[in-house]
Structure formats: structure tokens, C-alpha cells
Length: 228
Ligand code: HEM
Image 1 (cartoon, protein in one colour):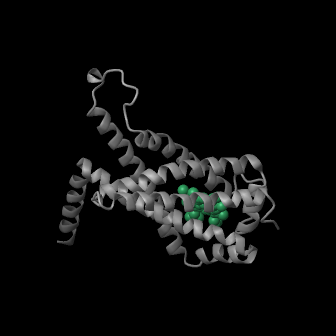
Image 2 (tube, rainbow, N blue to C red):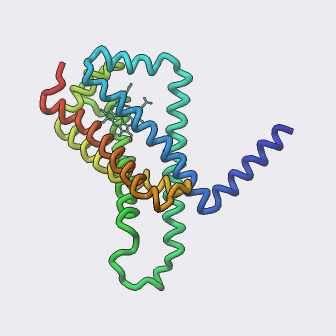
């Protein structure tokens, strides 16, 4: 009996996802989880200003409950996959709805915001892959020390091209977040004209905090403000 109920729920979820609205909701929910991670991750990273002991203790504490750590990693991975698949499918649906034979040569085929999402998304994905190889696995890091986050960040950002790559990644993150947060509200139905200016202001302020907070770290290392 529970197996039948589970199959039924899976079937309902699949049917919901097949509709364009389902894809939008999947994108919004996965985006919300990823946004939550980005905020939490930035707050964790900013502890570098409190010194080596503090940030390294934070990194150790994350590993104290392996089930939780791996659960969060798995959730993030699923959210990234769902976010990308729903984005690709929604873009394909939009293109299908606009057959080229009807389109005159118009310079503005899609909105500025959706075009921004199309290039900021892939840059962000490339950034995440580079970032994991740099500060999590250490593969592309000049002097990686397992679990010494403080040293890894300082030595990592002393390499100027690496810092520039992070700054470019954060600019892409900013453009992606500003539009993403706003469309997330619309996808879940929070888009009353009365709240529009507030929601847009929220998206802009949150984005600015995240971008400035994150960029401050490579800049502070390069400027010698944080050092060993
Ligand atoms: C300047 C900005 C950033 C800094 C200094 C930074 C720093 C770090 C460090 C030190 C780690 C390794 C942590 C550890 O081993 O305990 C890490 C892991 C990670 N970072 Fe970042 N990060 C930044 C921005 C971002 C952004 C914008 C994203 C996502 C869009 C991101 C996603 C991740 C992920 C997914 C991990 C792996 C977490 C895990 O171990 O499961 N980071 N970051």
C-alpha cells in the first residue's frame, strides 16, 4: 500500500513537472535552496576576517556530522541539476513558442534579463567547477593544505589571475541573482504590483551584499589586508 501511494505521488509530481508552470516552480525552489546556500556560505567565508582559528574551526565544525555534510552536498547537487535542466527546458519551450519563420529581424528577441541569465548561468557553472577544484579539492591550488581553509584562501588569492577569476564569477553571480530572486517571486506567485518595488529592492540589496561581501575577500588578500 505505501508503495502504491509513493508511485502515485511520483506520478503526480512528474505530471506537475511536465507543465511549464511545474518547471518554473522547480527552478524557483531549487534556486531558493541555492540562494540560501550562497548566503550561508558568504557568512561562513566572512569569518576569515576574524582570523585563522575562527575560520578553520568553522570548517572543522562542518565536518563533525558527516551525514549532515553529505546530505547538504547531495541536496545542493540535486538542486544544481534540477535548476539547469528546468532552465534548458524552459528556454527550449520559449524558443518553440517563437517560430523563426514568423520572426522579423528584430534585434531584441528576448529580454535583457533573460539573455543575461543565459550567459551568467554558464559562467557561474564554470566558476563553481573551478572553485571546487581550487578550494575544495585543491587540484588547481598552488599550495593546498587539507582543512586549512585560512591558508588555502590566502595563498589561493595571492595568485592574481585566480582572484580575477573569482571577481568575474561574482559579477556573473550578481547579475544572475538579481534577476533570479525577482523571477523566483513571480514563479511562486508573489508579484502583486504593490509589492513590486519592495521585491525588486530586496533582490538588489541582497545581491549587492553577497557580491560585495564575497569580492571583499580576494581584494583584501591582494591588498595585504588579510595575511598570515
Ligand atoms: C570569494 C568568494 C568565495 C570564497 C572565499 C569561498 C570559499 C570557499 C572555501 C574555502 C571552500 C572550502 C570549504 C571547506 O573545505 O570547508 C568552499 C567550498 C565551496 N564553495 Fe565557496 N567560496 C566563495 C564563493 C562561492 C560561491 C559564490 C559559491 C556558489 C555559487 C560557492 C560554492 C561552494 C561550494 C558548493 C563548496 C563546496 C562545499 C562542500 O564542501 O560541500 N562558493 N568555498
